[in-house]
Image 1 (cartoon, rainbow, N blue to C red):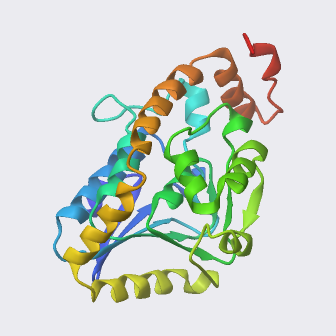
Image 2 (image 1 turned 60 degrees about the vertical axis):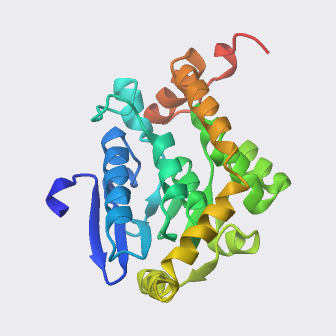
Length: 266
């Protein structure tokens, strides 16, 4: 199965499916193909009765995922070709929530921007002590006004979620644990072993009970899917605007963005 993938790797390790975002040269930022492959891998894990939990991680020791590939967006105006012709990040978010098996984020480095949203949507997050967390949307002309904001507020509280998004600061693994953003922090060398221990432990539990529990937890926030759809539509329009294009261009050119001159109205 590994030969089917270019941007990720997928393997079965005991009761766990291990999905690794494998673009370390771009800090595991995702393009359209990456999202397609993540969707395929999660669906494979859903269908495989051997799999009782999914571990999502990033290749290398620098980054878990730094979100959408802003360099790709600056080069081509989009995130590259996809199988369906659509950039299906919203569907990936829904799939992580809907798969009736626990999804464990093993955060091995930077979890930034859209990569931060991915770990937040996982059922639990285990962080290497070298991991860092944060949002970048307003710095690069992007945002996630769906699950990335509304669900984050459920996780860490309204005040902290607004701080994370408005100020775009980065937080250490220890700070993330204190705010309830991650479940555990371990030495970087022990991260995958710890994630696999969590997978093995939950694999001993009733799969049907876990399915119902996950669906019950999700029921309380499923209405946020509608907000997420609206947000993705708005983001598509915004990234095509002069202000949105300025964020990507400034990032690619390694200069401060000049958003103000592109704002049409207040």
